[in-house]
Length: 506
Image (cartoon, rainbow, N blue to C red; front, side, top):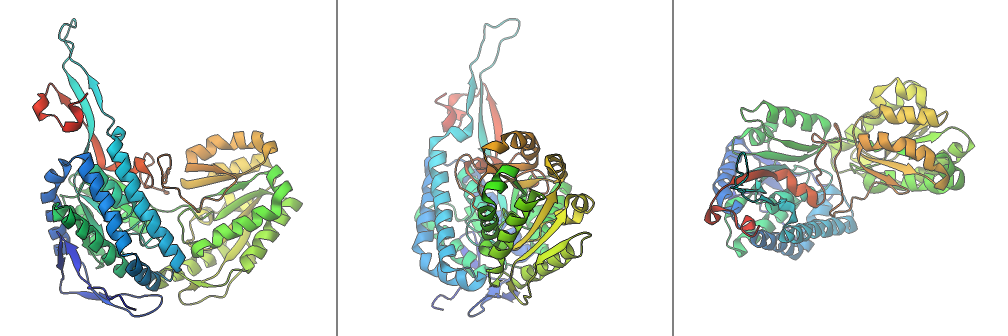
């Protein structure tokens, strides 16, 4: 490897190290030492962010857009280093890292364009009516304003798009909020390179270095210190249900509770409707297998459960899915812990009452290979644990007796990121019955596709009712995600000289 990390935290533009160290655990190549985070380092980062907030909140939309564009440029300038260490740390292929870097920089540039437009501010003006009877009306103006410093937790499965300069960070900076990132221990070197890019962008634009800090690794106490620091005003998190719920509870118990925007877990059910499976069972089964196995199943939108009406068409669908998954060789997961959790989850499913194993794997260490199971609707409805996410390339087929039982199964799901309808024109009536249930269940409902691909754009919603996320009114992907870190402020009868510049033109 030609790239060697410096191994420091980045706090207020400076490389800082604490007493404790940890070693990375790459899938391939050399391990490196990094300074481990501590509550004291978190406090330093939060102090820097708090000191920077007033000035950053007062910057123009153009200044913040220029920052986002410059961060994207600095990340691209380090593309070779990011790909090299990212592939080594995660085991992800080079093409995936390059594609994810493009998504990350594209997201930054999209947000820059979005805030330049200004519509996200939701500006409103009710002019004064001094002659109104029986009471005059004052001049009232409203717009969205940044909430304060934001804590962001890097995700294990997306070392770029959901980590140091990922969607949460991009949204917070676009809103005018400084960011303190808790780097993920699975890819500290990747996080460091991206952090260096953000520091370089701030320096190039002569902006306050306290706008961004990165604290690497450390014990659970580091994350707890971050979300409970009184200077932090909101949290962005992508990770496990258990870890996310623990942090959510800490945020709620603070003397000043703060919003916790957590994306936690989802099985993303796929409903295979009768006319569709009758006409293209083999294609649907093969497509589902490919989606399940993509990236070793390490996507939060992985369609882990397929619901299909029992019969010969279902048999053909299952046969095609089984054959497709049988062709998938074992591949390394992002961490040893994730591989262990995957095998534990597979055993839990296999031991469920009425569960039939269609494809099992013998995988060990960091590697994982597909599993496929099936169960009847009756057994599914009596075993809530089957609805829990198994993070990896595992599929479960639920065979239902008819359309009514399919609807009953649909109603049994908890909150999801996505829900998919595989349908033909002849399935419209059944799809119409299912749609209100799916709308209530998921943040994104799609037809005739697979959810393992999240477009970064204006209309995207990546969120949903709990446990998919902790805030059903928010998204962590797309331009609407910026609104998470803003709040409305009304200005009554303020002189124009005191108004934010974005309100003076109303």
